[in-house]
Length: 481
Image 1 (tube, helix red, strand yellow):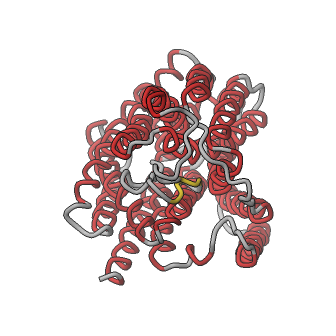
Image 2 (image 1 turned 180 degrees about the vertical axis):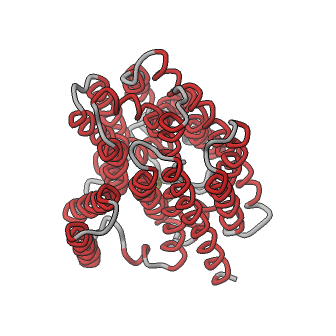
Image 3 (image 1 turned 90 degrees about the vertical axis):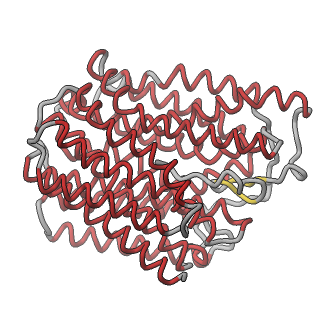
């Protein structure tokens, strides 16, 4: 799930990289009475965008075997199909918020919706794998435009602090709904219609949301002086793309070769160049003073490891259920429900736990529970009954959900209030990067086609990542006593 700022921390500062002004300072493009009338449709528009982003991430996994058969694709092509979207999304997330600051969150949000609809149409009509991969990357660009600016646009529209809390909660719940219903909706669309339908279904939703946004969302302020870190952006995309290619290449060659060693050096050089450029920029995309703060930097790594385990496992299990177990998309989607429903429920449990413990407690025990579930999966394999598989999936989902509010709060508490948007953006980008790594790593382990031994290794790798997240959270907690 995507990280979102706390409901009571939006009034001033930035959200997802976008500027947010307090109610007293925020200029309104509509009257107060008209503004109240606009709040509900504006919440629907922004929530629908968040729902689409999350839904599109989850349902694509269930369509992978059908897409592979349609285009005679190999595992590497499927990994790039998923990672192409995620790496562009992760790379552009911070600068997309700055784009909304400069040209207006409403404008960027509306353009992002139209672009997402166009990209979805291109995915649904793709004649070959290469064009589908390119269209998915375009979806990633539009998703990066939508995520920070949907919340910023909602914040500009809903003026009253109490109603704004309710609106932001509804926006966040839309993302949780996307996680919960994604597997079953995706399974039904793939099985009863066609894999192309999972993309085409976005079009009417996006167009309706765009019409609502254009009519009811307030324009908000613009910061004409806001600058863009173009070189840093290019290097971020290049570094993440090279990292993804390197990990997929290692899996494809089943080991280390001269080529993969050389490619690893390229990744290191690009990463060093990115850090060098960011250290010299007057307005960097990723302020290194924030990134290297022990609390924020460590929480970002926890978020990265979280998504390596959770999202990497979802990708691997999508192949295991359908290729190894021979399940239909609907049955595979139903088997994901124990994980996704407990993931959504776990966020509520995690929010309540924060009232009774320090911010790192839920991260420690939540990731520990998820790691335990992954260990059980790896130990017992995937040839058991559906009920037996569902039990560890529940543990993985519940533990993963418990950690989410805690990670968000820890990131926000690590910085000054006016820099909360940057902190949230750094955590979101780190988590998306973790998803990219998880798909590449666990996908390589599970094999193409999926094997029983590869499935166990993938579950074991997820357990290591989640256990690492728990251990790092424990270390942070010890340092902040």
